[in-house]
Length: 242
Image (tube, rainbow, N blue to C red; front, side):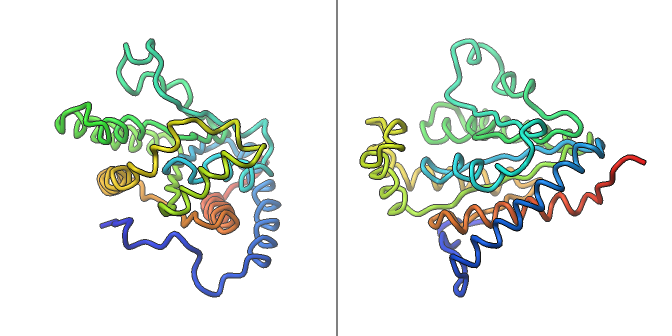
């Protein structure tokens, strides 16, 4: 059973920053080659799901770990607060058009898991409805797997102190200030509530195991995500057409 309280947010001891950054450069070169072969092979599609508390680094991973891949074969979809039109449909309605086709990689910056997370935090849905949604998500991911969609789920794990530091960065650093809103100051006060909600998600939606990424150090977060994705693509025994 996953308990985030007992999982470190820091790199393992002995991991050196400079060496890790150099390893990331090599991994990005390999990802470029693998993604090209993935596209040419055409047997699989790949869905990458990024979940985590605010400021955990979902944008940062996309920019620093996955950016070496050809953008013609990789697309990013961000799921924000549902629009009024989306609210008038079932919660998965807005997701379906964005699943990747064969040969393509799709990155979900947040996902259908938000439709369990936020109602759990806000207590806006009953336990029965949340349990129903959990079951639907597990069935959906099983359905995708049987149709050759590989799913890699990342949870970016940060501490409360690091989250506070990153919110302060949004206030003080010009290139990050556009991300700041007054609501950001309320986020750390709900940190424990969000963590408990994520504990439930990680344990109840584990048909496909979660990759929990220690994310207090950006350089290690980026490296580990790239390493996991590289290994996943290597497992597929990709081939160019004859």
